[in-house]
Every structure is written in structure tokens, then in C-alpha cells.
Amino acid sequence: MSVNSLMTDSPPFRQFVLDDYGHLLASMISLIDEVTFRGLDERLARRLLAEAYAEGTVTKTHQQLALDLGSVREVVSRYLGEWERAGWIRTTRGKIEILSKADLTSYRRRTSTSGALTE
Image (tube, rainbow, N blue to C red; front, top):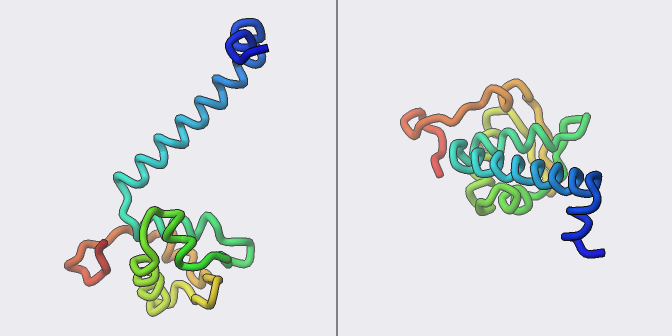
């Protein structure tokens, strides 16, 4: 059977395909929204919180995070270094420990006049 005939002849299959397509489209729109309207610093903070294990640890390198966020390692490393100096995180090779979930959760992109890094 071809996909076209399954779509026509099988309502459960058709519903599955359309539901899956809807989820994929919603994910893509969410990603476009995030990349367009959120700065890298805010996206990085959100990613760290989302990927932290129960003990508050993210096991990714700066390079892996940069690739996930569509950036470069140097920019991600600058933000992580800033947050480490502020006491929010601790970085070791291939691991980032979140020390202050509250600060990362409430983090909002700062303007360049406040001294925070800009992209």
C-alpha cells in the first residue's frame, strides 16, 4: 500500500500523520519564536535549566551547547564565565553545575549599558 492510499483508506493512519505533522509544525514555530525574540543569553539560561539533571548538573561541553543554540563556543563560554563569576554556576570539563536555579530562572537579557555581554 502507498502512503496516499493509506491516507485515503485508513482514518486512524491519517489522524496519526496529521497529529504528528501538527506537533512538528508547533515545535518549529516555537523554535523560530525563541530564536527570533529571545537573546542567546536567555536561551542559554533556559537550556541549562531544562537539561539539568535532578542534582542540577548539565553534562555537555560549551561546544555542544553552542551547536544546540545555533551559536559559537566562544560566545557561550563568555556567558558561562560571567555566570560562574556571579556564583550562579560552576563549570568543569564537560559538566556545568547549577548553583543558583533562582538566578537562572529569573534571568532576563540585559542591555549593553548594564555591563552584560551582548552578542
